Length: 480
Image 1 (cartoon, rainbow, N blue to C red):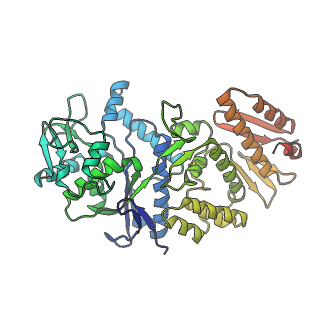
Image 2 (image 1 turned 90 degrees about the vertical axis):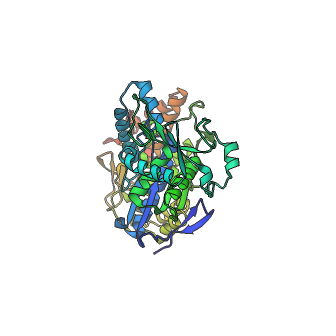
Image 3 (image 1 turned 45 degrees about the vertical axis):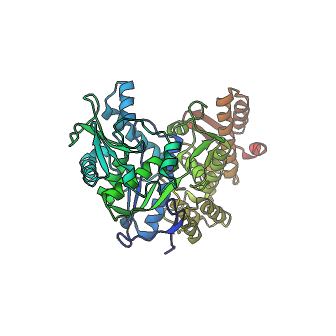
């Protein structure tokens, strides 16, 4: 079996994945979403990154030997604020948002984790952990709150590599008279009658954010497990605080052995921001006609530890390349052989860029079965929902037929690549027109297509080209 080596944020090196809690069995916890709104494009990156890792782990160790936990935070001040602003019940907001998240992640080809706990299901476990921290002197009660004493944990800051003084200077810390130290963080907070709350030794209240993940990972994976993942923005304070409270609650435990963090996402070279008008949810991009598989491919082209720039050019390139691969793989059965070189690339700290380079080599070598099987390990070229899109082409090279959106067409010669190019050209022209309000290029292409015997259908779902009985590919070759 190929050795898996992963960059460990805590040790600042690539560490071998050597499961020791239960030899041959791998455990992974990834911080999931706080469910108050649609998942934005940045939220999708850790979901895709750790989905690829989970696929690799299942391939290497067997699905029955992998336990992947990704939580849902369904009690949080952001959720309470959203309920106050909208006038809707909290349960209605969280249930709707969870459904949205599942739908959007499925569209990106993200498989469900093995366990998906909700924070509200583990309140009793949180209270028990907090009681233990108070009893051992690592936490204290004050004015209805319970706070973790940062000074009680000598290793605080080991993950981010910063001292407590540096963190105080560089972080936004809540100023509160009941805190002994500005860096002390909330484990439990009081709840008024109009917000969610549970009875506890410190009165009616609700948990702080950080204790939720410590309690859920402990309940489901134990006090020590193999991998903890999340976005780079969670390293401090969330993951730093998780380490402190978990290691103090279970002295001598490792908590998580390997810490993995993905870098952030930009849009056209700029930080994604509502004020800049470049803030998009996954749902927004899907509605604009970008298939989930294309989105996933764009994400995977950049190594997870590098900042990723989402650009229109990358989307267009991914759309074209995937369409070319699908012309030769869609008719093949699932579960083809997997390239050892691709496995080696993923085992080297999830080097998806090198893995995609191997897919390109397989395509050029016309090893289509291995192309499909290998791409499947990345969640590409599968029959999963990620390609549930009307612009779906399948070229059957042996019969000379092209299946376009369910229509089987006899080809005069092999214009499959030509049709795909023409389709993508119209999609790009349409996207540009929607942005600049100039539809002259769309009209020009549509007129040429219709004259050559193509029926052109455009809707919110996307663009569809259907060859008619008089379709003449030669008449369109100049447009390719």
